[in-house]
Length: 295
Image 1: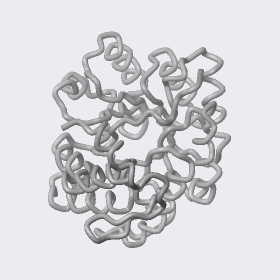
Image 2: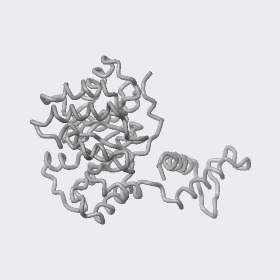
Image 3: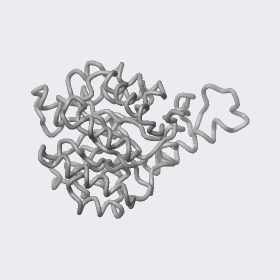
Image 4: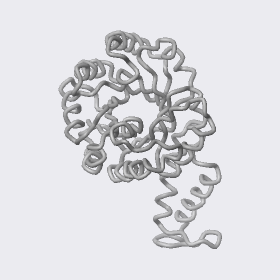
């Protein structure tokens, strides 16, 4: 059986942790992040790859991370480490495997074929890093795999640092030159029925700047943000959690449409405001998001 993409999970805060950092791995159970991405790729030097894999095996041998979603970022399949990383991840069966340097739908399908060939349960999904110009050009066709439950694709992750490096886009604080591509990711993810998580904020000591970027990303439609430091968790969880006022309004809309006198109506009035069934769909999505966001 293939994964049910309709099963929502909170992905407000996704913390990268290098697989070489055993102290950080040991502390994960005490952190309030929704997702942990254990990194075998960028945060691990070439001479540390095997040590990172050994640490990862020990970590998964004694689970201590609670209910949070556990993701393994492997090296690119085109690298000398990618195949071995994916083979190890297949044996560990995390919640998801994050594929870097995804350029085309074929990258997802080939990884999925390897997991299917290793009899990895459908509960282990695939996340895709969107971090290359080719990925941006192929966003629609990659995202469309989210509609095919057999592909395992469940989430996009914006690789903003690599996009800046690969394109020469100026990385200014307000991200004005990146925003068009970030919005494309959101649009593609929604078309494919998958989640999308924003890229990292590198200046982890600048918590005010980080909080502003989280609020902007939430306004763009992202489901959460990737983090590089535990100190960023609280702001991310706050920014990507529905506000109490919004939840109350959504409940009022759902209740109004459920009322017998409004049965079959396409448009109703609530507190002097015209509300359509499209607003009902938005309200139901917000309530679904609120229901899975831990308090």
